[in-house]
Image 1 (cartoon, rainbow, N blue to C red):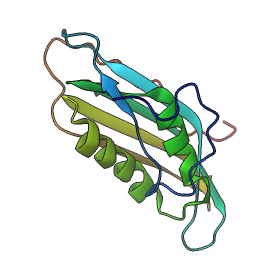
Image 2: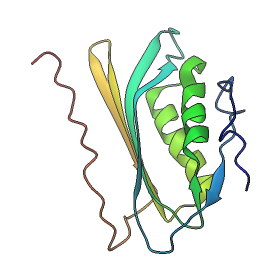
Image 3: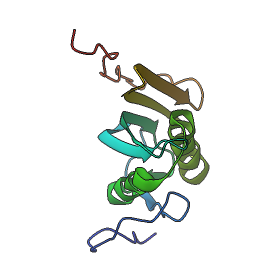
Image 4: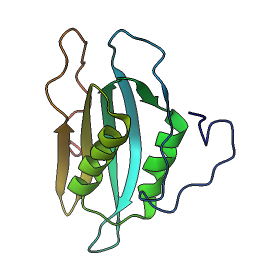
Length: 147
């Protein structure tokens, strides 16, 4: 499991389908939570081609492997020119991580900024959080506009 991107100059993948995620052995045997926060996630509206922006929070409890953070950053960045609805981006990211990494548990919160006056928040999780693992609130308030 040699990470492909770690320590290397790496170009942004052209799209999420060709982006490769690296996984490394989990260094701990006790259950714990990992959180990745991507406050500047970007994709494109599949209808208008206009940019969409989100604050993503990915929480997971690892099993045998953990996702290498640079490969995750590049994977998330590959959505920059990818046209998909908010729901497809958010759930697709989670489903790919679950399929490849096979964590004990994973959840994602996609807090999308308004377009057309309506913010859309998308939430997905792989099941019930494991007992004994501290799972904090994602800490992203609902959109309030200027008020």
